[in-house]
Image (tube, rainbow, N blue to C red; front, side, top):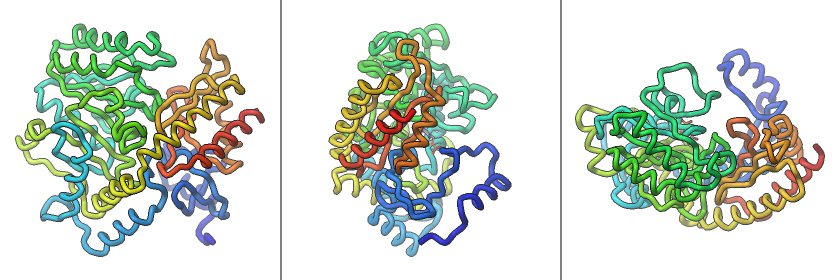
Length: 427
Ligand code: PMP
């Protein structure tokens, strides 16, 4: 049993000593003291099914024994910076990771977070092309440092900083977008932006194959191939931000971008790469990677032995436990069941996503698509009381985000949907 401070005690300290901008889910914030695979436990020993996996970070499951063991083995052997000496962990993981990427994507730079990975990717694109202009999609989230906040395109995450030469293209959002699911029509806006908003030459285009923070928006089909061609014509690099959609989560493929059949020039990743351990990476081609030899470049802790040992263990678990296949099978089943709920509850406007990155958008009027952003809080609260945790997001805060650990089972999926069904009925 847990003997540490209570939720109230922690909350009091947090209010006094931590950032006033920190937010939390639920009326009374949950004190999570223990995790095991797809479950979390609070201070009273109450078990919750984790349908959010800490925002897609815990792919293998909480405290997966193989990952924990790899961390313990490494931290009791040697932990150090990556700058000065050789260590096999970083080299072994880089080669295993490169093996998971298509084409010539073979050179890995490690970072400590997704923001750092995207900052580096944007800089590489600017150095390689000699251009400043970056195109990102409206509703995107790419990080919160100077460059990435510019690329992020939702006002609620943006402070009043310089935009840094970023242009935001129309989001190919099949549910709310003007062109529905017609990816090619949205792609035309990229051409227009290049023609009318830049010199005709750009540094690059950055996208999430499935927008996570933005509310699980899967880019309209047939969008990326024409965009890829437009970016290439303008001399730019294509950057796939796989922080949420990567690492087998979509089920059909290991990386989200593969679902639209393109091969980007740069891929960035974080979150699920380390099963909860701070780690991020940028992978690109040997030719593009060379731009960083123009000056000295390093990252003190990016790719340190403990984090890369964890990352390598994660890759092995994903393979050994067939987690990609599981994401596909359980995710398809879960999506089917959520879609069926739509017939019963008018509040569900849209069910979308792929594998185990799914979204349920709530509206008070299906025609007007009015965001049900107070109702969602009530449903979420009831689901928590029933022992099921899900996430929330989207620009209007009205989309359930379901991104559980990839070890989620069909029984878990049933429990989650039944809890959502009941909670919606109670509204
Ligand atoms: N890219 C995407 C797609 C993300 O969802 C996030 C985090 N929500 C980031 C980048 C930034 O990652 P981090 O918080 O690790 O800096």
